[in-house]
Length: 144
Image 1 (tube, helix red, strand yellow):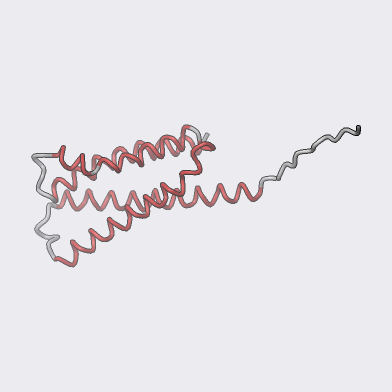
Image 2 (image 1 turned 90 degrees about the vertical axis):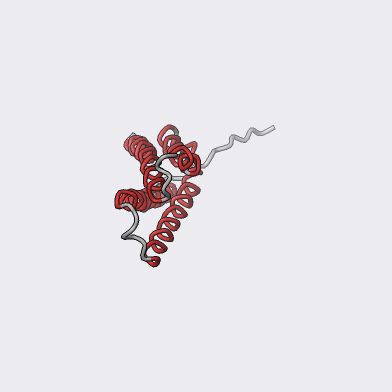
């Protein structure tokens, strides 16, 4: 139950992350007057909302997809670090809106935190499977 609540909270935070990401990107791309364009470009990020929701809904059934979500989060962190590096190297950080940079920094921090949480959930599940006693099925044999 505790894990389900944590996954539902993460799904809600991922939905907030989507809107913060689109807000920050629209400021940095100077598309503040057309936010629907940025929302369409960022729409694949809504898959994280669904992933966390279904992990909370039926953990056992959807736990096989958790490593895939972890890889997606790792790609998001990598992409965020690349963008941050490009902004810092280009020297244009002073000319960019502070709210946009702050929004993208918050998204990067959340991606890193949720990736770590998913990593430890995967490790906890592997440890639980290793500690679980194996139940052997006993077959009855009847003589003729």
